[in-house]
Amino acid sequence: MWHLLIVSPHPDDMLACAGLIQYTLDTGGNACVALVTCGDGNASSALRFIRRRGFSVHPNPYINCGYYRQEEESRGLEAIGLSRNNAIWLGYPDGKLWRIWTDYRTGCFVPIKSNKTKTDRVPYENALTPGAPFSAKSILRDLESVISRVSPRIIIVPHPNDHHTDHAATYYLVREVLWNFPAQYRPDLYCTHGPHAQRLPLNYHRSLRFVPPKRHPSPTQWYELPLTQEMVNRKLLATEQYASQMAWEHPWTDEYPRYRSYLYGYTASNELFGRVLEPREDPRFRRRKRLSISVQRFLGMASNFCLR
Image (cartoon, rainbow, N blue to C red; front, side):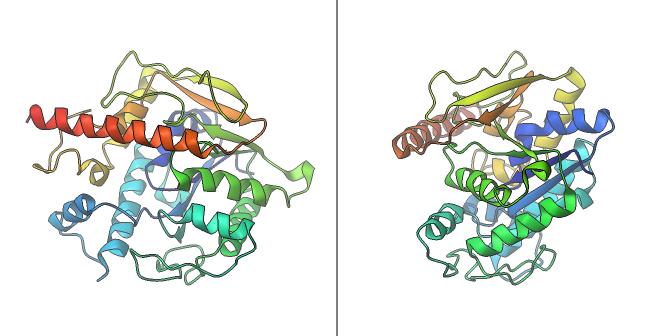
C-alpha cells in the first residue's frame, strides 16, 4: 500500500505539497504523483524558452512543450527525493478540464479537441492510456485505475474554489471517482492551500507562513504541517527546475534571478491541507481571485523588468 497520492492538474502543481511528500518519505512512507495534463497549453514565452534550449522531440510545438515539462517535473521530483518513475502521466488537454467536467455533468460525452495540440486524443506515448479520447469518461477510468493500483491512504488534490479551473475540475473528477469505491477502501481526500486563499509574494520570503482563509465559499477544515529548513531548501531546489514557467517573467535572459518568481511564493515555513466539508461553486469568487492574481503577476514582471 502507498501512503500518499498527489493528483496534480499540471507539472509544478506538486510544489504545494512538496513538504508533505518529504515528510512521508522521511517517515518510511511512499508517494506517487499522477498528472492529469502535461502542461501543454502553455504561453508563447514558454515555447520560445524551450526552442532556445534546443529541445525537440515532436513536430507539434505544444506537444513538444508537454514532453519538456515532463522532464522538468521529473527533475523537480528528484529534488525532493522521489524517482521519476513515481510520476504517472495521463496526458489530457491543458486548459480544458473544466469544460470536460461540465460536459460530463450535463450528459455530453463527446470528446473535445484541444486548440493547442490539435487533437482530441492523448498524444503522449508514455501516457497511462495513449490515444484515449479527451472525455470525462476516459479521465475517470484512468484515475480509477491509478487509485486502484496505488491504493493510497491519502489523496491530495487542489481546492474546488481554486482560481484555476483545471485545478477545480481535478478536485471534482477525483471526488467523482472516489464515490465508486467502497467506504472501507476509500482513501481520505485533502486539498492543498493554493492562491485562492491569500495573496502570495512574487519571490521567496523566509518568514512567510500560510494561514487559513477567513472567507471562503466552501467550508474547509484546515490542518498545518510545519516544515524544517531542510525541507524548505529542497522545495526551493525543486522550484528551480521549472524554468519554462518563469520565462514570461524574465524574457530577456536564460538565467533567472535566484528566488525571484511567483513560483517561489509557494514556499513558506509551513503547508496547509484542508478537508472540504461542503464544496460550493462561486464563479464570482473565482473571477475576482483570477483577476487579482493576474494583476499581481503583471506587477511582478514589471518589477523584475525594472531590476534588469
